Image (tube, rainbow, N blue to C red; front, side, top):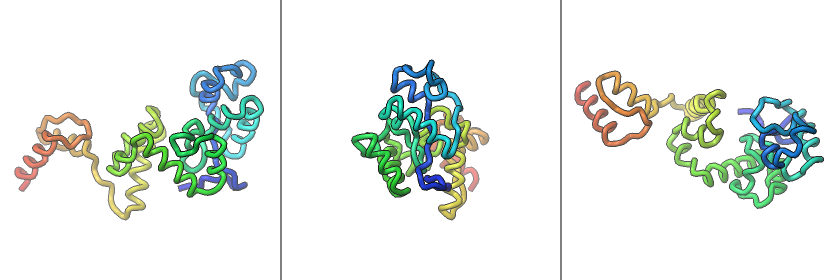
Length: 198
């Protein structure tokens, strides 16, 4: 993947105006509509220009500004500093400036604290992407991209998900809920298909 740092060695960030609005109770919506919005809007400048937006927000409310940016390789929102293992947002930001190893440390803390480690370990990409990125994860193909990256770097081929298997079994006459869970009915349908197919 891509580096978690810009060419000038600062960590990559995206400033989230919706979070700045939330953390400042909308105090700056009228005076700084590019920094504070009640709803999510795609108003990113990208790259080093995100630091210009952050600097403007820092002058208004330092703590809210740092918490409103997503940081580093894994784009973890500063407001999540505590679950990542950093008691203060300033310490989190300091760690994000150090190395991608610190980015990984924060990512692991976030994943474990939010109970997403099983989804990751079990390669349940959709469940993980939903838990990590929220309901909008599909529009950025996060789950698909994770599955592709896993296949590329694991040396293996993409394995079908349980939901894929359930759909295939249903195409052969099974009547399964396509829920991605290997429950008793799914296991029985797999055994029946194996017996039938020889």
